[in-house]
Image (tube, rainbow, N blue to C red; front, side, top):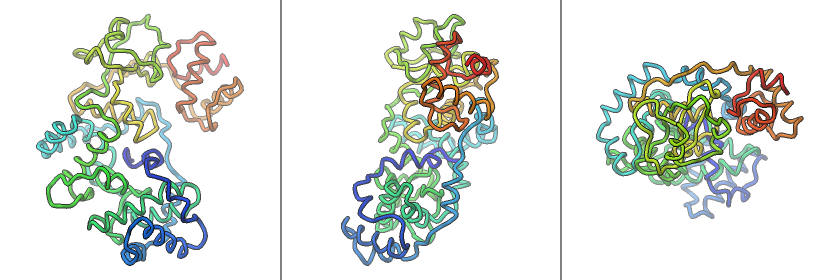
Length: 393
């Protein structure tokens, strides 16, 4: 299970595609590697170094199989979050907070990012470094670049890995990680390591596999690069009045915290944050389930992963590690199982809504369509599909 890593299709989009078409994908693998060497030279790398770097690269069928069987997070938020957030992870997170207290202090001072955020990433990515992946990274990147489905995404990562190799921070034979090429305790791609890698332990190298300070500092810099706002919150559990206008919920609506307070929004514990901050209300399982206020930093999570359920779970876990209580699960209305969700998507599509593939997944397009149809049939507009909505359609 990866947070930084399971979302390769998102974050690797930041890799430049300018040189992607210079080496055609597919065809003979040896010829493809020769093309990569030529492209490396055109980018300023030494030819002999590039050949030595790529000489051991082989196609990895296990990588292609892993790519094709990517998991989708289908469980609703309550079920999913309870699976991922164990007492063991909470205890280990607090132990790691103490062990690397000075590193987290430095992160908070330099980047304004709470240790809870990074501890949650570290836990979900690799169980605090215990499971970092055993795919040969160079083989994975070259295999996926050779494959013609998304070559423009993976090819730039090869040349980034070559630069790391030239710096002494990548070994073609022994560097391993996730199937999509992410490396280390917080699972970063080579290009992201080049741009955001930090030598946190002062040994002159950025080694995300073996150095927790390097991994944590690099992860913090990456978040900052993606737009994390210094010293601001990201998520808070709230209480909503029974007569609340549910159509105002969802990420599509932003209001100031002060305006939300005027509408009766209250923190479950303590106070809401700065009234000038913009925020959105999230109801992952409808108006009768958990209720959260998402601040601007919450949106940075989507630069790493497009799964709403996974993002919310990671963000919430970060608050737990900082002392927030277990969320109030409430008593949400029953949701839809896979076949019912597909039936709902077909009906939504028949009503003219673009829900993408009929896959039984409650994605952003399906949620948006659900809200529209809830409004039309007179149900609370909270974005949570129920048997009642399905029957009315």
